[in-house]
Image 1 (cartoon, rainbow, N blue to C red):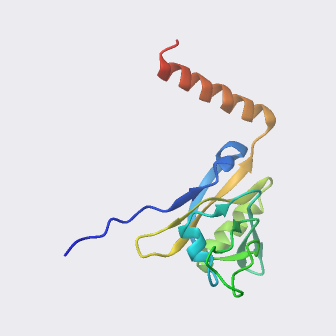
Image 2: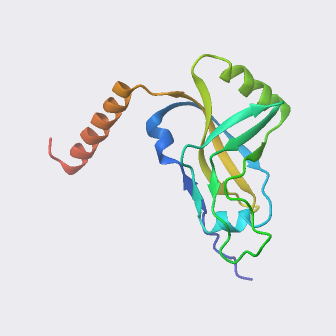
Length: 152
């Protein structure tokens, strides 16, 4: 019996690492409808300005664009609908406590499909970076790149 090689499906929100200081990460399930999982498997996901909101004790992700499935029909999903994240009550209470602190928010970092074939979203409690912090990050990145090349 041959084992199938599982292709790791993972889409990252690279801007989150630049725009935010990530304090704590957490993995949450996503409540999907219809053809959304097929679009995720095709890596047709965009994180442009995606963020999470807590409403009535539930966590939702807004701004996460999952493109319509190419072979879908009239029952295709709405690409910009807000998606419910699946966390247990203890985790939700802990997140609520943390974002009530000043300047903290919840941002999605990456979406992936686990070994069981379920879509998961990695989220992080984050603090927005100031302009000078971003400049410092760029300088450090360039410094590391130059060291690797052997220019110093």
